[in-house]
Image (cartoon, rainbow, N blue to C red; front, side, top):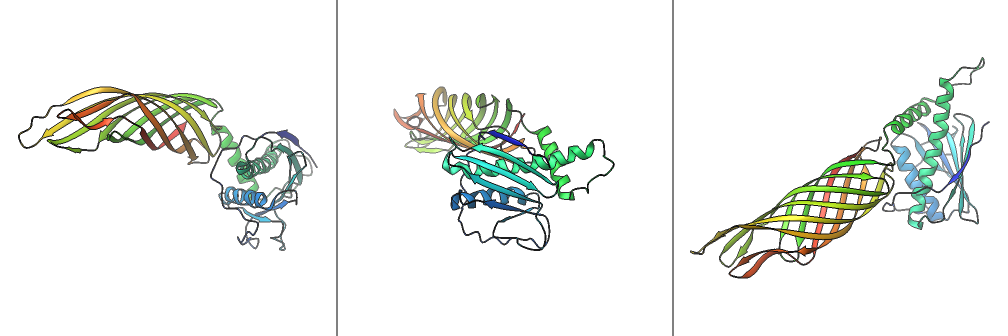
Length: 344
């Protein structure tokens, strides 16, 4: 029997917490299909143990593997593996996977210091999943090597399937440092009255600290004036600096600061004998915001991205009717974005 002991701090992606209660009402389907058992010792607070179970169950569900807690699944079949969790007084998690499919026990220690309380369940679930994959991947690699005279029984098909998927994901997963290219539907509304909507093309590069650019086109909402209507459009170009969670995570978050140049064009349509004119000018904005992403594929390359930002114009642009501002890029500017992209 082999043992693997490792220690480290897992940088967990921030995510909205799932509902977690100590009373898990999900039925444990041990009568058919592969399943695992999660044993959380009393050193784990009940809410944390339930949160870990929720997140790990969701991850395993994608591979058609059920997860049962220590009080469930006491049926006639043994689980593929048992996951043991314990927290010592120094706030260090002792994690072990007792793999009955490969007859191995793998252990890992994970310091929880510095991990926010609302992210600990996710961090522990990710660490447990990685350790389980490592056990099954080691089994696959051993089987691909020279076979001894007395070969042990092959592991269940689900173990080989997950191990092969792990190799594929690792081969295609985004590097720690790399690029991102994407397209987004974006909208801005200024308290000065200008409302714009359109699309962006975006490109960035880096790791935890990233730099990027964007370029886009906007169409503005038509507004009524005393002597007619005013339409608008804009070309947008900007640079952004980001602090982001690890690129290979299944979900993540970013904090960013951005500077944009916006060429706004106004077109007037006069009524009641008034005279209209068209014009354009360049405005400048500086702002900041938060964003998040969720992977769309097992290789964690394609992702869905959402963001919200607030900016202030350093140079405003306004459309006038008889000397009075009707709509303008001024005041506070709220921005929203939703898009898809690929980590390169």
